[in-house]
Amino acid sequence: MTVGMNNTAGSVLAARWGAHEASLRDAPLRLVSAWEWQPYARASLASNETAEQWSRRVPVETAAELRRQYPGLDITTERLTGPPPQMLCRAAAESGLLAIGLGGLGTRAGFLGGSVASATVSVTERPVVLVGSGRGAAERSEYEGGGGGGERGGDVSGAKDPGPVVVGVDPGRPNEEALGFAFEAASLRSVRLDVIHGRHRPARFAHGSEADQVRRAAEPGRDEEMLRSALAPWLERYPDVDVQGHSPSGKPARELADAGAGASLVVLGLEARRRRRGVARVGHMNHAVLHRCSAPVAVVPER
Image (cartoon, rainbow, N blue to C red; front, side, top):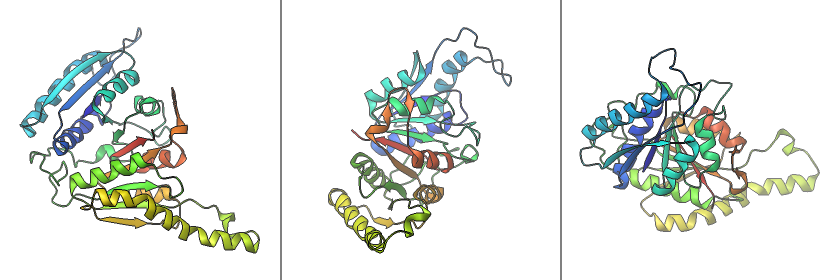
């Protein structure tokens, strides 16, 4: 489990999320800070500390804090020098799961506002969890002071009843990697898995010839059948996971974001065709969820 730490408001929050996730997976935690020399870099207005100084100090201090909260967890820190997206992807490839903290994103900029996170998601072949990705997420305190030692089945805040894991599925083209990630996450947390499925249908969907309307009226039934087929092998592999399906009447992205308000994790798939090196093509629906959702969001690429 790797956490990429940068100078955003959600960076330490991501480290706390990563510590809890590592404890669930019985895996070591690696805190990585990536710093690239900038010829005109200056200290921020709010501090006399430069980004280079921050990259040395904060990961070490965060690791010390997490060792007190998770005394049995193997935690290491590493400072890399180079372009942050490349360094973080290299670190993720060695661990299999990368978490990144976000913060300070305005409504207009959103997720794709030129952040290190957007560039990392566009090039990595590993799942990336974005912590603090939506509006108001930076103000959430559920990961603050989460003592409790990371017991299985609880969230970082020590709450007795963590929220469900939520996954978005296109019945016509399910992302097997995203489904597997979501089932595993729900099993590790001993929580329900909510499957949001369906397709956004424009207002003109109801219009057309009588034959078109008959064909369209049959689509929900076909979607349900395809969804059952997609879920069947995962239900057999994870019999302990309680699965509930939800077919949104409106836009799936809005349903996913709303469901994420009380979720412990939201899982999104990233189509292979959208992964273009150097370009953050996460898709309109994923972009909308990342912009609105206050829960941690895992973006899982297709192979």
